[in-house]
Amino acid sequence: MPVALWRTGLLLSFLTFCACQEEDCVLGIVGRPVSLPCFYPELFTFVNYSIEWRRDDEVVLRSKWETDGRNVEKWSTDSATVSADAALSGNLTLSLTTVDPKEDKTYYSLFIISGGNQSAPICTVCLRTAASFSSPQLQREEAVQGEETAFLCHSSGGFPEPAVYWLINDTEEPPEGSVRTLAASLPDSQLYNITSQLTINISKESNVSCIIQNQFMNQTLMSTSYGAKGSPMVSRASQAMWIFSTALCVVVGVMVLAGVAYQIHLDRISKRKKEEYNHQHLNRGLKRRQSFEEETQTIRLESKETDV
Image (cartoon, rainbow, N blue to C red; front, side, top):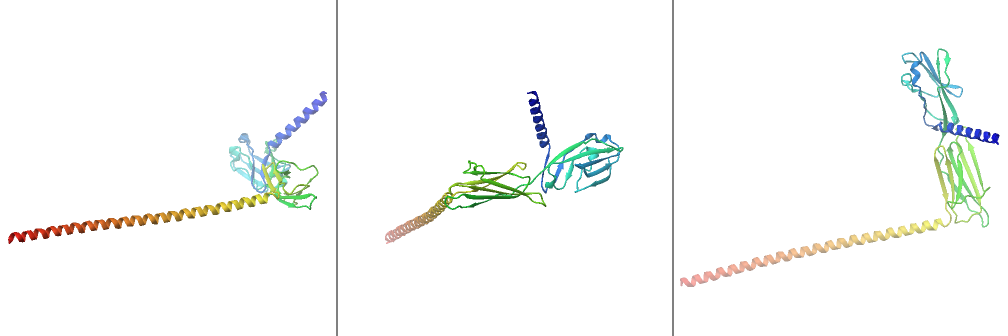
């Protein structure tokens, strides 16, 4: 019993160590630059020293400094660089211009060489690489009555190999043995092309989804093949939307015409009232003038009679 517990504890410790190592890795996106961090403030204590960044056992960068922090010699592969003021700041971060899928799970280590003596690794950084997959293309091959239906899902250009899932009607998993998935690594780029086939006896009304999951990229892509009942619903929805749009246009048109007609009616009423007002004002003026003329004539007649 103690031996079993000891073995279990050892296994858990190993898994924990692996998990910690996985968490310490830097994720690099394929084709993009990446920085591998390393800070060593005690660097100023060294005299006439050089540093080496190594990928496993291969030297990718060598740089030599004098006592005053002046860089006198530098050599690198793949355009790898460190900060120009690394000797003063202690920032020895390694910058890579591009990430290659072949470098997945690669360890980079930094060494300091002074007076012919090499230090233990100052920094060790794990590099994981990843690339996004294309949106999955899902094809449905309708089967003859009573036969199985085949679904083909394809996605390409990603890294590392993803997890592929199938769902029926958004919740059901396909039966065991109905799915075959092939992951092909391209020889030049090491990127993956994924092809998955689902063969199942299913009704034409069922929806089937293919899901591509790249955990390192935190990427989940899904494509769905909708059943036969999906098309009439979409058609009816489109038809209803068209009818609603047409009715709305007609209502708006009628309202506009009614508004224009009402405005014309108001303009006519206003014009008629103005004409009536002007006519009444003119009549009043004429009446006043006639009354004034009549009064004037009466006064003249009375004046003549008085003179006689």
